[in-house]
Amino acid sequence: MKVSPLTLGTVQLGLNYGIANDGGKPDQAVGEAILKEALQSGITTWDTSRYYGNSEEVIGGFLAANSREAADLLVVSKFKWSAEAMTDLQKARQEAKDSVRQSLKALGIPVLPILLYHKGKDEPIDQLLRFLPMVVNELQEEGLIRKGGISLYYPDEAMAVVEERLLQAVQVPINIFDQRVVRNGGLARMRERGSLVFARSVFLQGLFFLNEGKIPSHLRDALPFLQRLRRLAQKAQMDVAQLAFSYVRDLTGVTSVVFGAENPDQVKQNAALQLAPALPLDIREEIADAFQQLPLKVITPGMW
Image (cartoon, rainbow, N blue to C red; front, side, top):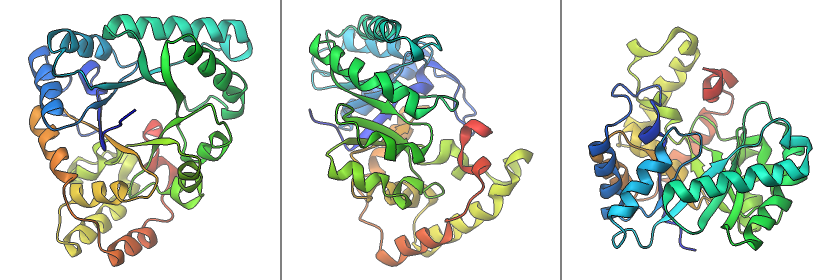
């Protein structure tokens, strides 16, 4: 299974998403142009979910019309359990199977390359792990998926997942402001066990790009850290996007960086970020030192 170093996040194709998103959900033509540009840029791993509006259907329509060009495409999708399924193994099995079949139908593919559990903020990780490895294994044995894993809400949850050998893929938030999975050893442990690690929220859902005058009142605590980030980018002689991207890209253990796009130009811009040289060691050290203690409400979009 070949995962591209960049993964196109497609939540924007199905929903209005992101604190810095002024354009809303793209129309069908723009959505198709985004997907086409991703393929042309060598971005052959796409991330979606049953909970991203009609994102899966948009991708499925594109695949049907571009089957030859998209032959090497690897789709990652996600599912969720109801509260009842969390305590009922039979219901957990059925809901997972039903969701995967719905994803396959929407995408128009016979097997889902990677399935992740779409974890919410109030779901205890220990409770999820009672059933998830078993259900993932059964879905693999039935030929519905190739690999399974989990999309984590909190970076601290990575340490619980690394012990589960049947969960081979993990998506986790990692960015300059939120280095918890690096500091707690979770990323190193996932690297040791050979997990596929998808780093999301690299730009903290666009917060890094907001002008000071557009920062909402409930995020004013982010202002001094954003100012520090911009000073660091100037010192490194690059823009904020390149600094933020390169920091995550260069972390040992990250398989692929997930990014979203509202138009084809943003796909090109993110593809270009991948080509920049590694960050100098002194800049990485300064990043590690400058952003150790940020308020949870700043680094957790679910609290915005």
